[in-house]
Image 1 (cartoon, rainbow, N blue to C red):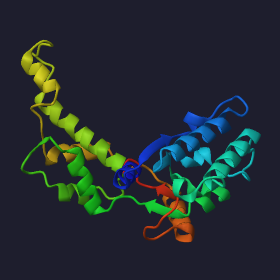
Image 2 (cartoon, rainbow, N blue to C red; image 1 turned 45 degrees about the horizontal axis):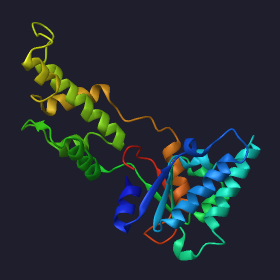
Image 3 (cartoon, rainbow, N blue to C red; image 1 turned 90 degrees about the horizontal axis):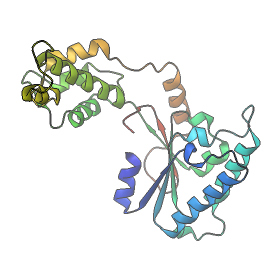
Image 4 (tube, one colour; image 1 turned 180 degrees about the horizontal axis):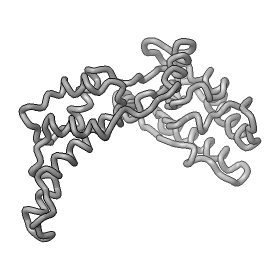
Length: 250
């Protein structure tokens, strides 16, 4: 979402790729795909190449059991990012996102000069995310989104999405009973679509019993430690890597 917003603000094209789009069992095929990718991006300047789950693409060459094809793949990417034969003004911007920045190869990290951590949303951010997911829903007058936001500490964007989804289901179940309703009844069809549901405070309280913050173990601490050592404060030009703690709010 951040990468798309960046592309829109910059008036640039965006190419989104993952490891699955590039990898191949055939020798040399992945390297050719990378070359074509950057050639296309240079021809359609300005262009942003966005790489999600970058740790799967750029795992360190010094890691145990690093395969030869992974090393050649990474070397090709480094060569294209350097763009020795490319005019600086035509170089594409590379944006990468990962939850494991400490697994990325040092050569890639050097070229991704701006490292920005997208942290777990704070209480204000959680309230805004709730508003986005509840847009278009009928809300009961007793529902205070600020209260729900205060009681969802450590929830990521995807956790909040799941909470809203469960609250909507609970609201639907409240007005829909299987007893005495016919599958082809118009009222039944309208109820099933959620047209009549009204989501209130009690539905969120009920949903919170089954939806909790995703376990984060020591990953959050490791990402914070990485950001403290290598992170960037403020904006600047250049390639960017985004470390994600808040899955779903990227």
